[in-house]
Length: 299
Image (cartoon, rainbow, N blue to C red; front, side, top):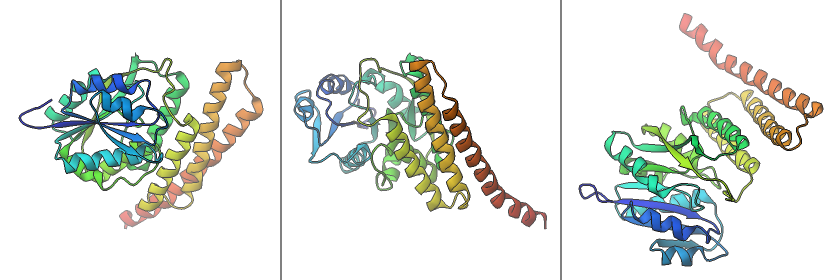
């Protein structure tokens, strides 16, 4: 709550979360000065139940995606001069009672963003989600997001400097918001660190998108960012795509293995081919950058 006169806002983007939003809002209100729910075109009673629980609600006529909701929330925070913002999901997977863990960390330890990190026995994340998360961590880092432990967790805390730097920089779509925040934060010189949190999955449909479509949307955004910043030569971009396709196929193969206990040899060969071609392309793309620089420095 108030800390030397400084105010905190919780932003909760939602889409059809009427079964969980009331409990999430009530528990969140204990730890911040105001709760803002962004209802992203829900077809159920999400807005009604959020207001009844005491949240300020901004309702969108159409579903525009989580990224658009977070952008709205950040602009709201700036307009009303909040000093700190915490973001969390409305489906119940994040524990609002851990908000002080993130907020106190960003308030007292001299950095700009605290990232919730789903960790060990405190998270019920399925194995295939853990694998997909790790892949997206590496991809986000490759797209200039820096070294990341959990790039896709939406449970985060920001100070006012971070809100000001990011509010007008975020331009992504759908579920790219977590990766985009990290890339823009890296570009703007914002400091961040991880803090372990719990995460609840059992019995929850925790996403309106499949893990594969989520991954593809993040990949598309990262590739655009790489192209924009000229981080790779043209030869590396196709290689990067091939690697990611191979990793996606690997996830699908792992899911199939856990369900059927069978390994498809043809599928395994296809995965290996994509990964091998992609790795070779990226390797030669890096050489294209590194070798000329070595000769230049050796003169």
